[in-house]
Image (cartoon, rainbow, N blue to C red; front, top):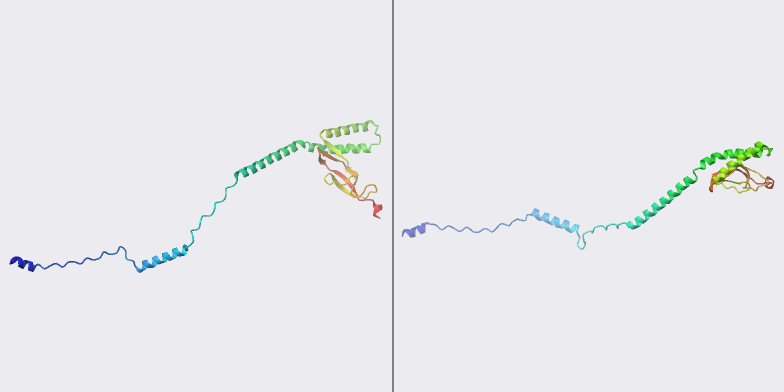
Length: 204
């Protein structure tokens, strides 16, 4: 009887209903909007059917053999030009000295042309000095050239006047004031000349 009464007095404990597990992360309206915005941006940046832009092509490498050949050709031309300039410097090194002698030769030639007695000892002595200087100049390959009767050559002649002439055609040299000289084929000193303006009688 006591055992039965004890069982009647102990009330039964109601069972607690099981609660479902909470989701790891609940999707809020703000998260949904952010996800939708990100998807919209990705779709706008990469349209369907288009691939990502490729890298620009690399420039072609220079042709080093061609550059080397050009460089060697330029260097060879430089050596030839330098050697030619050096040779010209040695070849015409005496030009200034010879040019300084020419006025003395001109004065001796003028004195001989004005001499009255070419058989006198004095005139013969002047002639010997003149001949010696001219020979020394020719030994250094300096040569005089004639201008009278020739057409005016501005590279070899310097016209200082133009006068009428009955004997020389217009445009040609009628008189030579100072004789011209060359040195090894190049003009050492240009001749100073008078150019004919033609026959005045024909002009009338």
